[in-house]
Image 1 (cartoon, helix red, strand yellow):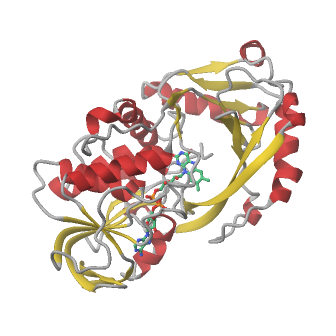
Image 2: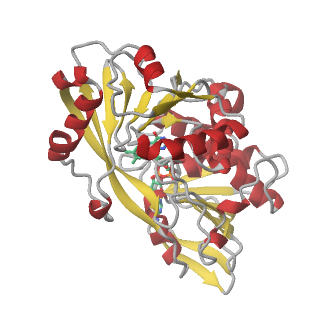
Length: 405
Ligand SMILES: Cc1cc2nc3c(=O)[nH]c(=O)nc-3n(C[C@H](O)[C@H](O)[C@H](O)COP(=O)(O)OP(=O)(O)OC[C@H]3O[C@@H](n4cnc5c(N)ncnc54)[C@H](O)[C@@H]3O)c2cc1C
C-alpha cells in the first residue's frame, strides 16, 4: 500500500517556507490539499507532511468505508450530502493524470433499528434529516419484516432506512485519489514527522520536522487524525480528541441474506455486506472505551458480544464463519463526538480538521472544501460550519452528534 506518485523522500525540501503546511496526509489532509490547490483564488504553496506514506496504521486505511445521511445534526447531514454528490461524480472533481479515480461506490442504505427505548430519538433524527432534504423512510416492524425477511423484528418499534445518498466505498482508493489530485495540482508531499511547532504569541511560525528540521509556514493545518491532540499540545493547545480503538470483523454466512443494507442494531452493533461476506463492528462498553494506540484484536469480544447479537438479529448468522479481523483508531472527540473545524480562537493561523469520531471519511470532501475556503477567504463560502469551531469547547457548548456508529 504505497502511493504511486512522487513524495519528496530523504532529500532537502525545494523551499524552507510554505504558505500552508498540512500535518497529516490521510484522507482529511489530502482532501484539504486538493481543494486548496484547486482553488483559483489561492495562489500559495502547500506542503503536506506525512510520516507514513504506506498509511498502514491510519484511520483512513482501516475504516469501514461507509457514508450515510442519517445524522442528528444539520451540519453532519449537509456535509454528507455534499460528500455523496462528490463521491458519485468523483472523476469530474479530481484530477491525476490518466488514472480515473475508482472508489467502487456501492449505493445502498443504512438501516437504523430502534426498540421502544430509542424510537423517540430515531423519529427526532428523522425530522431533522427530512428538513435537510435527506431521502429517508421510517418503517414499522411489519414493514421491516416484509422488506427484510431474514431480520428478527420482534423487539423492535421501528427502523429508519436510507433511500438514497448512502452506501460504501474503498476508503484507501479515495485517499489515494485525493492525494494524486493534490500532487498533480502542485501540492508537495514529504515523508517526515512533525515533532514540534514553533509558536510566537498568537501565531504558528513553523513546524519542526524529525529529519529536515525547521520549516516556516504562514498557516498550519492539524490533520493528524488520532494524533491530533499530540500535535495541538506542541503549540500548548488542548484538544479533547483521543485515539479510541475500534475492531472490524469480516465473516461469511452459508445462508444467503438478500439485499442487506448497512444495519445498525439498537445495541450499537453494525454489519454490512462486503465482497462475498459481511463486515461488522460494535463499540466497546463506555467503561472499557479508554485511550488506546495498539492494534490488538480482541477475538473474545466477537465470541462473547458480537456473534450472539448478530445471531439474535439475523438467525441465519448462527452459522457464520469468522474469516479475519483488524483494529483501527477513531479520533474520538470526547467533548461531543463531532468534528472540530477551523482556526483556534487565539492562534488564528492554526486550523483544526480533527475529532471525526467514526465519520471522517465521508466528511472529507466537505471538510477539504471548507478548510480551503477558510484559508483562502477567511470564511466559509458554501456550507456554514461555524458551529463546529473550536470556540464551542472553552464555551462548554457541545454540538452533540447522537447518531454515532
Ligand atoms: C474501524 C473504523 C471504521 C470507520 N468507519 C468509518 C465509516 O464507515 N465512515 C466514515 O466516514 N468514517 C469511518 N471511520 C473514521 C474515518 O476513517 C476517519 O474519520 C478518517 O479516516 C480520518 O482521516 P484523517 O485523515 O483525519 O486521519 P488518518 O487517516 O489517521 O490520517 C492522519 C495521518 O496523519 C499522520 N500523522 C499524524 N501525526 C503526524 C505527525 N506528527 N507528523 C506527520 N504525520 C502525522 C498519520 O501518519 C496519518 O497518516 C472509521 C474509522 C475506523 C478506525
